[in-house]
Amino acid sequence: MALPSTRSTAGPGSRVSMTWNGEARNYVLTIPGWVVAQALEAHRGKSSIASGSSDPVLDEQDPLAGAWIELVRGFNEFLASPSTRRSPLGARHVEQLPIDGPPDARHHTQSGTLTAGDSAAALPPAVRRAKAFCEEHVHEAVSVADIALAARASLPSLREGFRTHLNTTPRAYLRQLRLDHAHRDLLAIAGGQAQGTVTDVACRWGFTHLGRFSAAYRKSFGQPPSETLRRSRRAT
Image 1 (cartoon, one colour):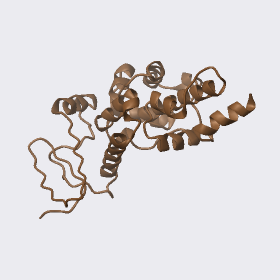
Image 2 (cartoon, rainbow, N blue to C red):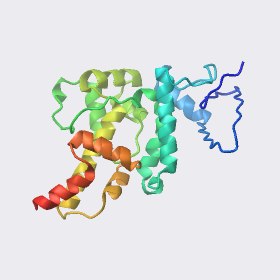
Image 3 (cartoon, rainbow, N blue to C red):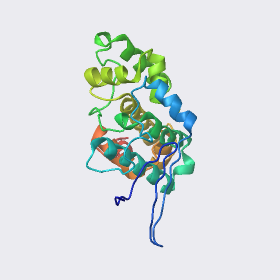
Image 4 (cartoon, rainbow, N blue to C red):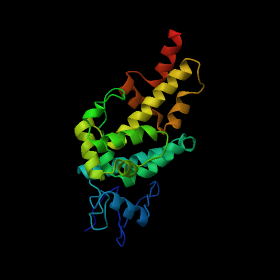
């Protein structure tokens, strides 16, 4: 019996039959087998990547399926964004999302900015190493597997360490670091030490959806990025 669905997955050797009308717009996201195998290795056999043995129909009421649907929505938004070509970091970020998996797509984010004094001495060594790696490579397209490798920990244990001690995930931590750098860049522009626009700064740090960037920025700094420019200029 065929089940109606607007979203589905297909693993190696499986088939999915689809019908649609002439007004439909279809997106197919293909992940090479070797990339999936690499991700499985990084996850130590606990990958959240959908396999061919799973139900091909994605139910939005299921938390895991819902997380995958959010990833695909983000991928579609990236393709449609006029800023796509302006942000190599954003492109690599979106490419990594399906491989890093839904656990890091969930919204475990800190409020406010990150500082160097996040009780570093009380953190487990793996979490300290992961934080240092993120801070050193914040301008690069790193995956959570890269972070786990640098931390010398498995992805599940590293994620658990970040949730327990920092109330976030490795990817969300890296995203917040990039927001902090975007904030500093906007302050520099407002103060006359640099040039650029909000769009320039967002793209530089991998944010290609300006609406989402503005919302995340406001949540962290209490004002939209455009207001940072205006207030700083008025203060000088």
